[in-house]
Image (cartoon, rainbow, N blue to C red):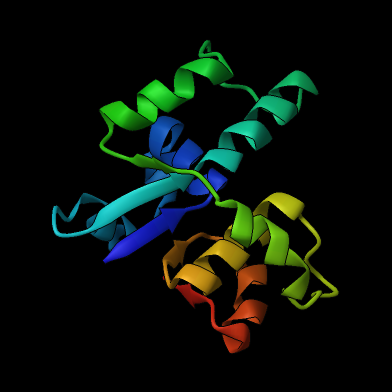
Length: 132
């Protein structure tokens, strides 16, 4: 299976893996699964770090892609066709986060499974989002 982890799951893997359910940890550790993080997540982390909204416990944002690689997480770049067609994703009243929404759209259009703890993502299931 191909999973894309959202920013929170990645940060929890690095700093607080105990916050991730046992089921999700098993999927993340299963060698049969391929785990990705979208490159846009690193931009989100960098912005939040710069605003003082994120403590990386002594690590800088530019170190995190190497941390992901060491963990066996592959970085996935969101392609220009996904970016250009993003307008097609239906707006959800309770969810406006642009970082999440582009990852959601990528997962829908490329049939990746999105791993997140965010319950707002459930509203995208009828639109074709596969989640854990």
